[in-house]
Amino acid sequence: RKEVEQDPGPFNVPEGATVAFNCTYSNSASQSFFWYRQDCRKEPKLLMSVYSSGNEDGRFTAQLNRASQYISLLIRDSKLSDSATYLCVVKGSGGYNKLIFGAGTRLAVHP
Amino acid sequence: ETGVTQTPRHLVMGMTNKKSLKCEQHLGHNAMYWYKQSAKKPLELMFVYNFKEQTENNSVPSRFSPECPNSSHLFLHLHTLQPEDSALYLCASSQPIKLEQGANSYEQYFGPGTRLTVT
Image 1 (cartoon, each protein chain N blue to C red):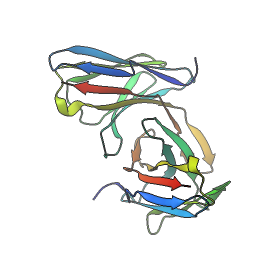
Image 2 (cartoon, each protein chain N blue to C red):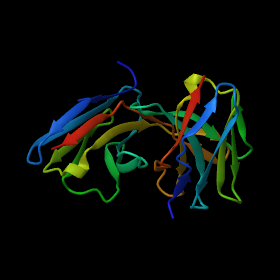
Image 3 (spheres, rainbow over the protein chains, first blue to last red):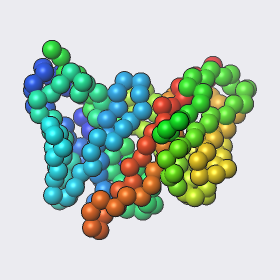
Image 4 (cartoon, chains in turn purple, blue):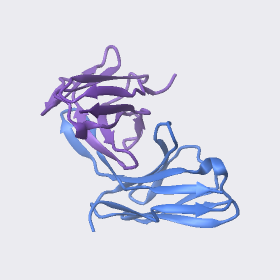
């Protein structure tokens, strides 16, 4: 089983739509969780951290369910500029710098 | 110069060549990383350096040899590579940031990568 699993997509949605991505992780001792965004042929960049209580940043909402080992990202009112690959990232329990990346979910927002 | 820079941005090398990738961070971080990203695969962590000391070697073949002369610079020396080593090689750096009580996060800042082709 992969340490971090995501639906690769692509998710093709019209502008203005709401879209949700899910991610599961295998290590129940994982400590911190993130969503990174990677544009085509560019480097990954941190989109947002995922807190235990859930958190929102503008149109983006992240949720964590530790019992189910599940992380989600909700994007409301999608923009063309949201088209990218969204990487689910988990920090392991050992080794304070080690991040485990999912393969990513591709989102394509069309007019 | 800001953030994390990598040179060269593109590299084509033969299997018998020796080349080096360079990474430099201008963020004052104390940890640096090499990742490999192949098509349709997750980022694979290769090496981690903390305060110039290698703290992680993720079972990387010896044809990849990292070097970290100081906290701002990281190199990846390449020799006798195979065609399957063709990929995007990304460097990253980080600094511990405590976001909430009992938890720590270490946002990693990535360089633009070196796209390597082994012929």
